[in-house]
Length: 194
Image (cartoon, rainbow, N blue to C red; front, side, top):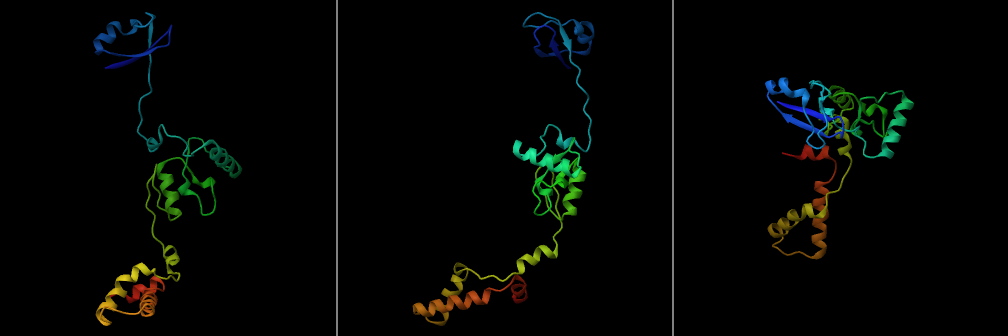
């Protein structure tokens, strides 16, 4: 086994690899190789597996001191304790930078918050949120298809219907026709699909 030690004189930390029998016979009488001072055994806490294990050794999730000051101040104003918690910007409510609600204590709480907001969050936590009809409604706005998207349709029409040659004005008319045909809303396009 490996036993960690610290020198009582120079403070050097060192590990000693010994069997249990060697440790029991001479473990407490080890000397520092640097200054020959007495070594004292370091005892480390045992590891515990908890739901907060994923946060061990990580920061509070904020990128810099300026952001940290703002986030901590907003949490204090809202009466939210940030002790032992981490901040995830993906848990902020819409339009609320440094939302006090975005602090979480464990993975379960973070996922619950993400799902309650209908969000998918990736990073220190991963949660896939549901897709709501309201999210799809944003795609229902009118749109106009770009020229390069209908270029193949225009060229095919010119080749098959017009013998491969048309005037510049006719080409522009065909572009407008195919852009009009493929533009609209996503709802209209889905009803046109075969």
